[in-house]
Amino acid sequence: MHFGRVIGRLVSTAKVAPLRGYRLLWVEPVDARGKATGEPPLVAVDTGQYGEEEWVYYVTSREASLPLRDPFCPVDAALVGKVDRVDLAGEAPVFGDPAKAASG
Image 1 (spheres, rainbow, N blue to C red):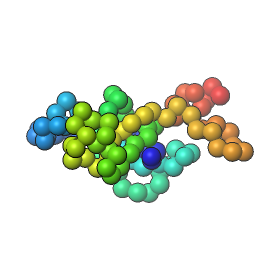
Image 2 (spheres, rainbow, N blue to C red; image 1 turned 60 degrees about the vertical axis):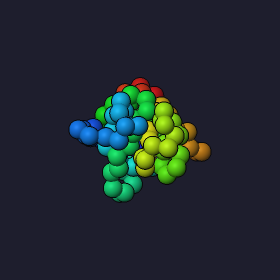
Image 3 (cartoon, rainbow, N blue to C red; image 1 turned 135 degrees about the vertical axis):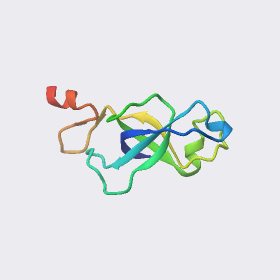
């Protein structure tokens, strides 16, 4: 699994049949602290109604199609969860929601 931040939506007027009903989102890869990794953004299938600026985790390769209705759908990445908090040994918690970070 990988961390990412949703940075926008991709609008598609034509999709393969198994992708109909799913949104496609632009995702910026980030590290465990929420900092951009410098890797290029990617397009991922939204499996959980995620929104812009949300910190998410995603899967790639063969695993990307498994959360979809059709497990043989041709996708490269799928969002599978929202990051609420990351606890790293010896460091303060990192929150997915900036409001929670401000309140501690």
